[in-house]
Image (cartoon, rainbow, N blue to C red; front, top):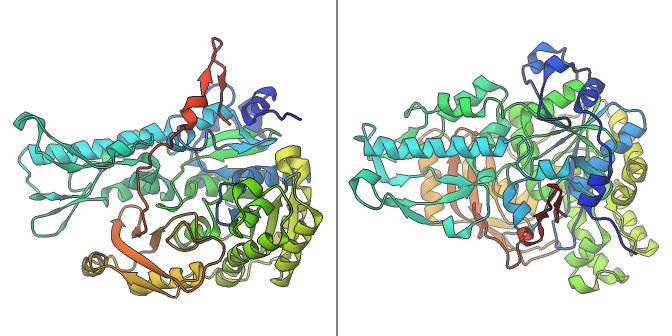
Length: 560
């Protein structure tokens, strides 16, 4: 039996004119900027102009990712379509795919099967140009730093302590560390430099956390680009760069309105990596969706130890948001992989491997229900090879923690396959009166080391944290500079609860090693670097780009 590819499914569906999608939300043509027939931008000023209301906010997270796949975005979209089928006025709020993974290891990130956002090709490629604008703003600032040094260096910048890097939205390991300014005096001052992937840049984080254009500009001004020879921070504001950067981002800041295959309105806007940034879509898109719909389904990157933790400890804290329910996505296959079963053997029933892998799921459930005190449902993204015995074992273990399990078949059936999940979400959200205060993994007034220790122990299950000498020096410096009260963004592998990607399941008896601390002063958090996390990924041996093509009619193939 052959199945249509994701892109073939997406291309076979007749899309609804985006003006009709906007009308479902009570938006007129005056409220939107059209980008063709099926994409539009929505003015963020509506946040101030429209009457304020409180929608039900549903967060989708997952178990620790595996090569077997989990289907978090697919489940998010399918759950929204199912809620729409049940008569709920629903929106999706998703992250925008990065070109790096699209051409590198993924081939697309707009959902899958019959639970996708469309136009899928546009969303996965240039879309409305937001990420290009972020790249341009990032590199404008880089150019202004080096130009300032070249033109006399009035701010006394120490050229050995320039911390602002250039950005590119394509995976390219060759650009991680470069030397630039070569070729004589007219080409600038030679120095070591490097590129980050655009979605890992602080500009992306600022873009996603800003409340409006003025907040964006203020955050951009606070970016620390370098230190002077006395050790004082030099900011983008000192270089007078924030106005021009904000001008480049003015239109990008408007959320992008598209649709699911079933016509549910969707915002796709912003997209920082969850293993090195805070990993969720923009605050503006989430808040505007909550103003326009009654139910909003959003997602955070990777497992609940990364994306969900940052969604709550950073985004919710800074934006005043609180999820009404959380979906934790898992697959039988991924749990068996976490239990030590090789990828080649995941199709056969193996209750022993499943039993060894389920603790990974249970840890993520505990994080949501016991650390953050939020109601949750486990969504099992069902595969044809899953057996009743395997599904029953997962359900029994989750029930022991007081959490229900809903089978999700949205990949094959669209919204129809998510009805059970949607019904449980309605039950969870309507049974909650919202009086339960959101609890965080740490308090902001805790010392930096203790905040990192709290995340590592409560969320990862670590015994303790080991700080390198370099990390300790940076912590002391940031506390001296007055940044000790910022939230923490942990840069950690997505493949394990530990900082070692090879340790699967639910490891115990381990420490987390923090090798360095950096600051994103504009975004408003400190980044704790663990393991081998890099802000510029490389391409695999066989990049997804090799399979992507376009024919004489301009029809794209190979994107999933």
